[in-house]
Length: 139
Image (cartoon, rainbow, N blue to C red):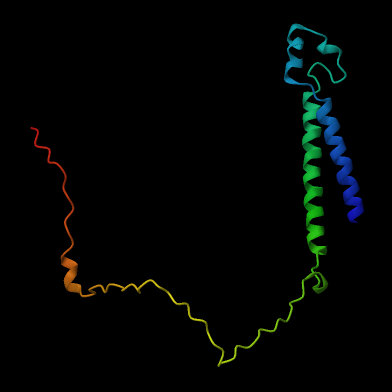
């Protein structure tokens, strides 16, 4: 089933490419306004614009339908097995002996004291006021 949809999908893609290449550009219609043989075209005096644009729209819709159906089929068929997942390794952590000596670094710098802050609510009223800046007394 997937091969059939994939073949149709590829065929539709090639047809869309051919239809787009067969369409005339916007500059090709300038000669038709001066009577440059528009009545002698294969698709009549109205030109091929409606035919090619309609066929491109139809095949583009079919292309989207086949794309979505291939995606749905691929999602349903996707299975993750345990053999693709990496195995968790058992790593032994060496036990630390309780009587092991821990090296102590001897620092020459004196220990810094951490200042203690007053956490009382009484100091909350002593917040300095912001500087109002220069006053503007122009009137």
